[in-house]
Image (cartoon, rainbow, N blue to C red; front, side):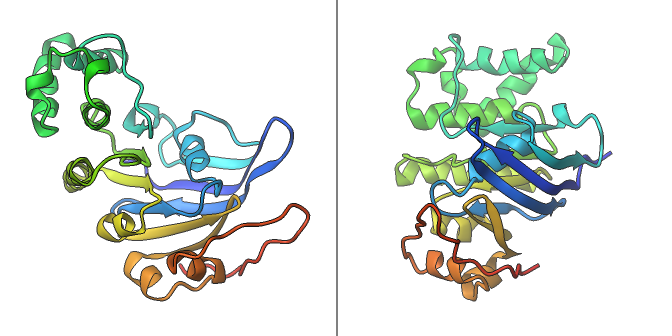
Length: 250
């Protein structure tokens, strides 16, 4: 049974000091298209992933999966991967054990995902001595081993060189090809064009536009989205109203 769609209804999230960071978020993630979430720094992209994944709870509204027990069928890879003080293979084994995968079947799964991510030779290397790009691939391997129906990726290629970025993008496409729903944040418009089937544009915690990727990059409907695609800087001053267009392209 699929855990999708994932539906957000009037979702709100505030900082401990009461500052609104996610505002009246209404959207639905469905099976199939690779979803790229873009927007300037502070738009709420990472917060949105953490809310969807269940790491934090909304201050208002609801987040509902089609299946109630969706936790073990979806995974999140952080921008800066957290590596345990053990080997690459043991990092994956630990994740499998937490998800109650039988010990007898773990070795084959570990070998498969290490091979798929180009890390088989590093199986017995301490994870924390791997390069940053290798650690990011290991984090993806660790998530992939769980065979998630939905994979959230938070800026997985930030600070990586073009070669390492290309490797990560190939992995994203391979995981998508196996039927996993990809929901990914990125600051790189070129990457969003390469990987995205649909685009969500966020600004100041609001969803301002949702559209097929080709349509969005050809002719965004929101004025802030138009400026962002052109490479213009977006900013706002406290106390001043945001320059927004309420229309979304669906």
